Structures are given as C-alpha cells and as structure tokens.
Length: 354
Image 1: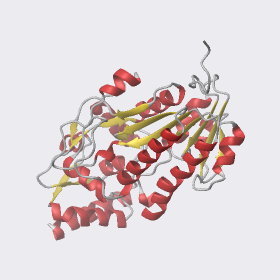
Image 2: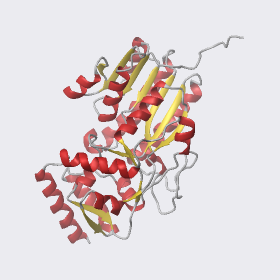
Image 3: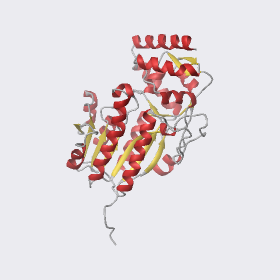
Image 4: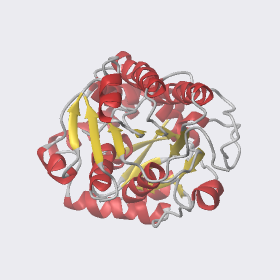
C-alpha cells in the first residue's frame, strides 16, 4: 500500500538559512550552495554579508529581509522552501543594538519565522541553532546534562532565556505541523581560527578575569564541526534535540595557560561590575548569564549526537582551543589599543572592587 499524505523529506531542494551575515549562517549557506543536489539556497539577514562572505556563498541568493516582519512568509512561500535552518539567534546584546533589540530579533523573529513555516505547505524540515545555555549554570548542576534534563536554576534573562522560549515555540510548531521534522541543536561555545565570539574575545584579553575560588569546567566545539553538524541536520531527516559539543573538558585555568594569557582572580562581588566595565568599554560583551558560566561552567552528554544523529566531532575540546590559539596569533581579535584598554580596565576594577 502506498502511504498517503505528505512524506518525510529526504534531500532538500530549496533551503533557507537565516543569519547569513554571521560566520555560521554564511558559511553554512556556502556549503549548501556547493551541493549540486540542492536546487536553490536562500540566505536571509537584515544586513548583507561581507564581500568575502558573498563570494564564498557562490550561487546562494542573498535576500535582505527581517524575519520579524510577516513578509518573510512571502519569501518562504514564493521560493517553495522545503528546509529552513534558523541560525540567526544572537548571544551578544552589543552587536544587536541592545538587549531589547536582541530579544525582539531572537524571540519575535523566531515566532514570525515559525508562523511563516506553518503556513507554507512545502516546508518539511526546520532546524534550530540553539545553545547548551538553556541548562543554565549553577552550583547544583549535575556532572553532565543530557537532553532530557531541565536546569536546576532557570535562566533569568538574556540569550539563555531567549533560547529556552524559542525551543518552546518550536515544540508548539511541531504539534501544529506534525508533518514537519524539527531538529534542535544545542551548541556549546564554539571556537576556531576564523570565528569571532564572546568566548574568543574573552581569551584574547591580555589579563583574563576569573572568579576567585572557582575553576569552571568547559566544553568547546571547533567552528568546522559546528558547520558540519548544521549541514548534516539540513540535509538529513534527524528530528530531535541534540547536545553538540566536542569530547573532553578544559578547566578555565588550563585554557588561560594554553592561551598564554595572565589570569586575574576577581572576588565574586566584583565580577558583575568588572563585566559591566568591559561591556561599557566595548571590549568584551559579557552578559550576566555568561558571568555565571565563568563561575560554574557546564558539561553536556553527547551520546545522542553520536549514536542517533550519527556525528562525532573531529576536534576534541583541547584540540579546538589550541587551533583557536594558533589562529589568534595570526589574526588578533582585538587591536593593541583595545587590548591595553582591557588590561587597564580589568586591573583597575580588580584592585578597586576587590
């Protein structure tokens, strides 16, 4: 008997990727455009990618659009999109125009995007780039978070809360459109020689502030592994929720030594003010939830990623971090003036507030 109704999507024909002005979104669009089996790739963002990124994106078509606008429905329906990869979630208020604008883009934008997908009959797969920050960071955390666990301390704001809300909206979408496969990828912090994130900027500081008496456990993911996971999710039927992180753990103090930087322990009461000073000086945009991560760290279980999703990262946490350090030596993330300003800010704050 021939099955009736919409069938699961095998290989995609028309893929839409959000957030293509950033590293992951743009490079994912480039990878998908290089696949001759994919008929068309659309890259959406509010600002155009750099010239270099546009060149690497090849035949991928850039569409300047705001996913907060209901007109995104016309883009999806008009192009006959069958696969949507939502890679536009922002973790940095500074680069998003402030916390309010960041929340609007993250949460309201995702709601509009999912509403557009719900109305588009041809959509058969939605992939969400989420974060392990949804588990929070706290003293009562388990040694490993698996995908079935909820945080001991719910995220009170910022990127982590946005991501938790967005995952909830995607679950609601999946109930309304059971014919659409939904994949949630909870990424840990990613590093590498090319990507620029809050984490890579933190380790580029000449003096790195840490929390006195704490040594956070960290998992990292190489930028190339992050792209490979997104590409696999976009081109295969792999619904579900997956933690995405490399094997192994680095203690924060070990990472600072491997980076050749100087650690400056700051008393807990001074951590928030130091973070605000760094944000105010536009050196490192560290949010309160990221400051909690520096206290307690976070480690996740990746068994499901390997056994069900079928992916094992090529780089371990240590190898990914070392590759970032080598790349940073060739391409400094912060200029000399900003590095010197960062050093003065951290040392002055540590002295005054400690």
